[in-house]
Structure formats: C-alpha cells, structure tokens
Length: 292
Image 1 (tube, one colour):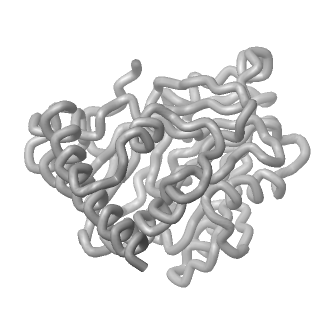
Image 2: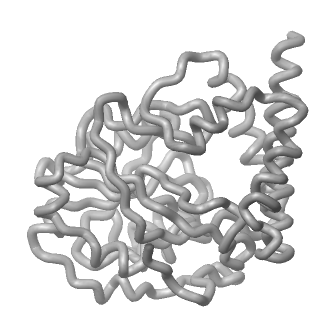
C-alpha cells in the first residue's frame, strides 16, 4: 500500500494549494477516455484546492445543486465545466453526471470537493489494464484528516469508496446509509490501494453535527427498505449489528480501542466520540420513528 505525504495538505486557512498532480503526465489516450466529476453544494472553501490537484488536460465537470456561496463561479474560473441541477441523492446524482459527459469518455473519477487525489493515484492509472481486466467499479482507499491532522489509526483502514468507474447509465444505487451510494448488482468490482486524502472535518463541530443529523435520518429511513447493490465490509458489518443503545459505545470502542485510535491522540479521541454521537443520533431517531 502506498503511503502519501507526511505533512497535512489541508491548510487550516483553507487556502488553495497547487497540486503536484499538475505535473503528472497522462497519455493522450487516457486524457481522452477519462473525466473527473465533482458533486458540490457550497464548497467555496474547497473547490479550488480540489481542482488544482487534478492533472491538466482532463475533462472536469462540477455538478452543483444550489450553491449560494459562489462555488459555481469559482469552478468555472479554474476551467471546470459546471452543470447546475437539483439534488437526486448521491447515487442518482452520480448517475446523472455520467449521462452528461461526452461520448468519448469511458471512465470517470468521482472526487468530493473536500478530497485530494495525489500524484501517485493518477500515475497508477493504466487505460489498457482498466479496459481489459473487466472491472466496472474500482473501490479506492482513503486517508482521513481531522482538523488538518492525519488519522493514522482511528478510522480503521482500509476505507474503500467507489471512485473510479466505467461510464454507464445505472452504475450506482442507494445504500442504507445517508452517504452510501454503492455499485449496482452484477458489476465487477476491483480495488486500488493508493489512497486519496479526505478532509473529513475541519472547523466548527456544529456544521458536522448538522450534516450528520440529516445523514442519520436518511440511514434510519433506509433501514426499513430492502438492501440493494454491493455493500462493502463496513456496510455489511453495520447491517449485521442491530441499531440499539449498545451501538454508540460499541462504535467508540471499535475506533478508539480495537483500531488503536488512542495512538492518534486528541484527534483519535475526537473522531471516536463523533462516530459514537452519530450512532446515538441514529438510535434516537429510530426509537422516535418506532414510537410514532
């Protein structure tokens, strides 16, 4: 597994950092076949940094769902093509984005605005291998940062997400969690162990809590529906353990003790407590839903 960078690429000031990926030379064939899609809403603090870490010459499409902070203009100023549309959910939005790409594009890298894909990732892409090995969706590992500090242990790596996909009409289906789009049944899955970097949280904790209250409500609603798509190890584990009063302390112990989060110091403790809070929110919403 490739380890990337010992320093934090996520400046506390959120200033743009010009990425070394700009100097990563991709073949003409790969540049023509590959596109980058970034889903956004109010990402003015992140969008420039994200795009500046993407190699020159790639088609970059930003799909925005109602930003009011100038994200659209900032993305256009850096050279991205911007599509403004309504929100369809994570799976629906990604499928819609692929339908808007040129016919010459056969592969898509999905990047969130608070993520950086390092030069090692771009250099590892081999169009011939991607085309010939029969894989439809590559799950890519990641490394999380909390308030600019790299979490080396607490999240429990590897931490895969579907990020490199063969373009198609119905690649993603909704998962049981709020931010859990997953590959549709029948698709061939591969893995890439060169991790991207994820600015998981920085700044005011209340903003993270507001976001995860919404994700918790989506997760609780999804638990009442049949499961679709190809879930990963984490998703299957989450479904195997019923949501109850025991899940918040179990979640804390998993990250802080079992996954050695205590070795991440204060950041590891905060991460573990935040995930336990999320589980408690899910449980309370479930109890409220069951009683109504």
